[in-house]
Length: 233
Image (cartoon, rainbow, N blue to C red; front, side, top):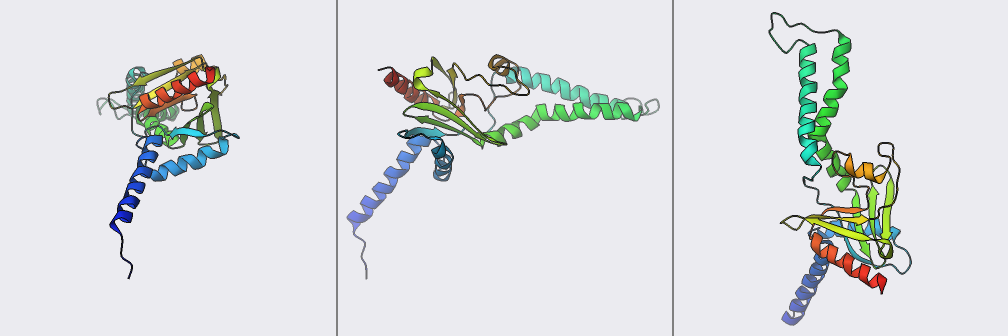
């Protein structure tokens, strides 16, 4: 019969605990399974001689940003007016004795505005959550990178020597956003340049070169600043 030695058992427990601490140090509050999923996604993007110092994902819970100060009241006004319009043209609004349905054209005309309004009020949060689950962040010994694996696979990155500045916005719970300048110039069907994309959008653009809503953001920011200093020496 095999007898467990207490010293071996304690050493094994200590080793497991240390491994879990190392995982937590690398990925913040992300679970072990997600940690390996992140590594699986990011590893093919690394070049020869490149090592991953930190990796993570955006927190998938709803987090409000400065854009929401505009987006929330605007979406409520849009959605409210669209519903009011539909109720009016279908005869559901007003005195039942005098109200009557408008021609079908006006009913159909209002449906897209109702759909858009519902997306802006609550649907965008579900869509952002879907995108966050498919967004991966990495800090290597050479660069920062953002990987999106939604409808297509897209990587945005910047080498430390080419980053002019990094800014941190954090909350009291440690969740924060790190933005980098300059950003790569990109084109899209809805946004013609980075300035318009940053300023005229409802919600956050997870395709940008930025780490949105990450846990322990200040620690990641300090790691990035340390690597930037090393790149200059």
